[in-house]
Length: 196
Image (tube, rainbow, N blue to C red):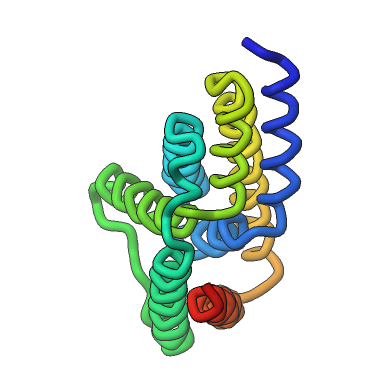
């Protein structure tokens, strides 16, 4: 294990990911589902998988066409914005989702949903490309460990922030704000897709 590679990967990924869309998505999903552990496990699994792919593939990921990746991310965030906006209307009218008798099914559904959203949102992201680049120059397993720990830390911060937001803002307002954030992220991704 190359400790310098672990530290370099952690520092690079943690700093780049803190203000990133994935952290915002984790905050929103945590507030939306109100199942912090399920959200963290879904996000952590997705992010760890992405870092494993990045470390294993090295520079191959940098060959993906950035326009296609940006266009897919734009569509995903735009779709997420519509869903969040519409679900805020349901909450404002007093229609809320209730947990069924089998909480394990709901827990797994939340984790799988979060995994899908975060995995797709992170695809081709700067931190994934940075991890691939570091892995092509240093010990790949060490880079993976540092990057994965950074991502797990950011996901934990996002889950904690999502829970804290629910104490301050009503859920329907938080969903409106989240829809606005997702819309902005969709616009940025669409612009990146157009610019290439």
